[in-house]
Length: 170
Image (tube, rainbow, N blue to C red):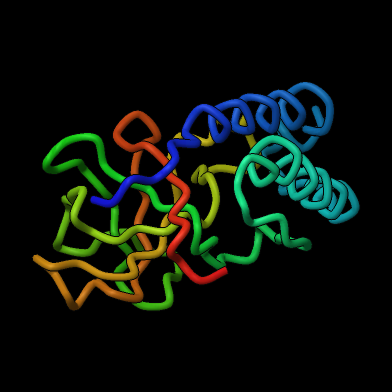
């Protein structure tokens, strides 16, 4: 793999700041208790805050200074490559492309040779406390499983690092 700058620490700082912001200040207690989805106005504010926070804590450390970035719209950030930390890591891969709601593809392992691009952090239940337990990635290519190109995957944060790929198109 060509030399790429490791920005995992910046992503983890963003993860912690965003979780804290949502869990402590924005999550509505009544919605939490009823497991109701959050109010649309709160969600709009949350998306804007997340985008600005992501820019301030992550993107300013890359050469990709373009705005606006919209994390909540499932578009990969091509310069942020997610690389598994061992030869095979567990992953939940979308059944379809584009991904919908099923993460049950028969392929359940990804490797450092797979080309994975960061989309966002992911949690299954957004009505509760957020943990951002997973990197949501777009599979741009796979030597072992070429049919996975175009699918999305969820990889536990503990199993991957994130690098700036300067050769990727902006």
